Length: 217
Image 1 (tube, rainbow, N blue to C red):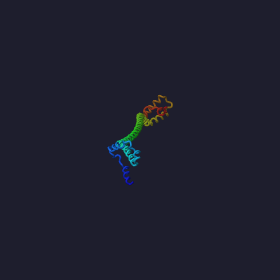
Image 2 (spheres, rainbow, N blue to C red):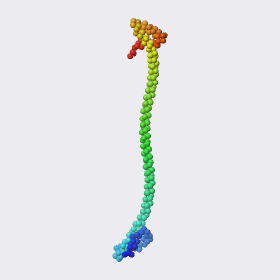
Image 3 (cartoon, rainbow, N blue to C red):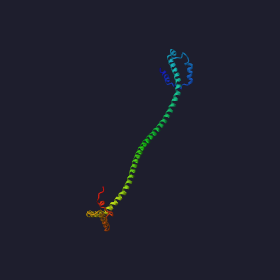
């Protein structure tokens, strides 16, 4: 029993892939091709020989399958390596695309902010242009009004300066005009006006009682 243990171990650890193709072909030709070389027939003669027959048939079948698998495994390895390389390139490109997309998003956000700012500035420009137009109109109106005010002030200053004589003449008219005719009244106001001016009393050159004392409607 002890002598069979190493033999059984060698069978379990036997490397089928290391068997030469010429040896396998020889085994198939000289043994496996024979009709009576099968586990049932050989096992009736010897149980261990029947087991060896089973093992040898399995070895041949395994070698046939292995021959088909090895190239496929090599191809799979090659394809896997190419796929990994392609995936690495793809990941790098995707990272670049993500970075570019982030930049695009940032630029779009900035563009949106600038667009809003532009709209705000355009609204302010439009508002300020309207204000400037109205201000220009107001300046023109105030300029014309300023001329009128200046003329009015000059007239008022002249009237204020002549107010003493005009009031004096008005009092004289009210006091003395009673029974005089209109013609004589005009002669009197003309003479009184001339005397005021001659004596240095400021008074209007064309005095009328209505103009000084009246309230035009």
